[in-house]
Length: 127
Image (cartoon, rainbow, N blue to C red; front, side, top):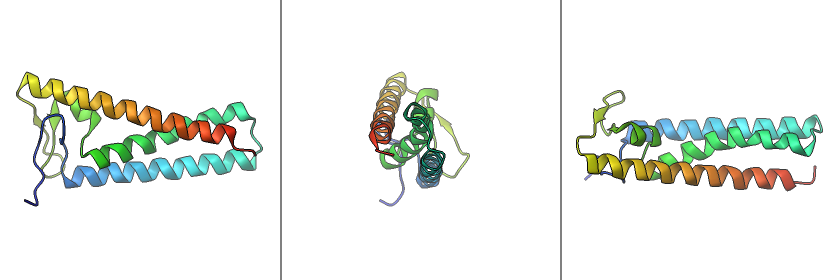
């Protein structure tokens, strides 16, 4: 079975959407590295390093969504897209929408935690 199918609370995006999330993760990683290099080069105070949280959050959300094959925005909206890009469908069952919202919240929590941990590492770096 090579095609991805919608599975409530488990999988709500197909291959094209997964590639989009991977691209978002790469953009977030690039922004994070650029921010870190800038902070180091201008000898920014430690407190300003907290600002790296936002690009790290972009990277975290993209990474976790792509690994989970689940879009948190689609999960909150009650939609899914396992076909071609732009072919969004509505989730019919209230139970399925509830499962998707629960997974979306889990992904959001994991992303926040990952970005917070990475931000903490940047805060304690000796530069």
